[in-house]
Image (cartoon, rainbow, N blue to C red; front, side, top):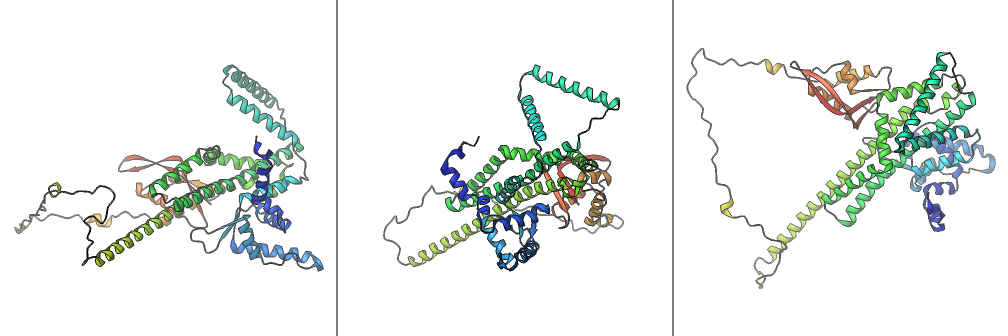
Length: 486
């Protein structure tokens, strides 16, 4: 339990500092909430380009001002100024993708929390009390069963489950099909929708945790002036600590679960079957479930891409620090040389006028290696005897191996027809490797440099074995799982 919320000072600090509370306290909070909800929640969008979001907000403000009538413009500022203020206040995050010409905007975790709270504040549809109670009961049962060390109790639980399954099988064999009533269907669908929305919102907090780690690492390097080795050790230790927390372990388990192709296909299949029911068909256009797999993959990929980008930023930051240190060292050497020239003709009278910390490194002459002359190449100067010339095989010059990237792309695009994604293992199984390991490396290169309108995911948490034949032998290569997305 969060006992700290019983402390007045702690609650006061939270209400003053949290960005979600500041959003609800803003002068135009209703307009901000309404626009963010329409742009991100209704459109099921994770991010917008600067120009697209600016145009969308401009149209929204125009409609709001026109609806105000003769009372004047309640929102007189331009859309760009509003976006800048919301970014400064922590409601939106603005950043630049690699190679992008314009900025990208996305919701912050605080803005997500504010939207969720507003949605929970006024529920006009029915509340699925029964489904929530069943979910609570099942979770308690699973927790009790999974944490128990009593073999007898667990055996009784399994036997009870088997009896229930046997009873249901007998009813199906006799033609008796028990089906949920329409109210229970809508109730459980609403509960699934809420859980999916909260799951997608959680990824923003995970991204934010890694960004805070990156910021902390930079601040410590600037303020404490540690060596690069110490900074890297602190960075990697903190990153490992995050992944070892409950949140980090849950994300790792989620990503491994989602990257299973069978489970992805099963998720699509269940979503498609769900909305084939007449009672739920009307909810298809407003539901997140048909696109849930794609949204989850994109959200997980964004977290993975964020961590990669943060590591690259830290690498550049440390490289810049190295450059500055080297330049400073050069400046110090020049200053020493200038001082040496100044006292060249008038050396200090003291015998010991300077001390150098540390022990001197002594390199004795006899410790050096002896000189060894290079081996001379002896060439026979005799004229070759006619008829004994060596035949040089030149066919190898014309049999150089070339791998066409466009051919590999065409293979992948053919496999993606009718599918949302395809793994490298499936591509290799359909079109066997003909040019050995170099061809697999070329596929790997395509995954890291895929075209902007297509995506590729390298799942380092799961390994796959690829097989190819060369010169009559079969070889196996173990690589991280590579998924090409449509």
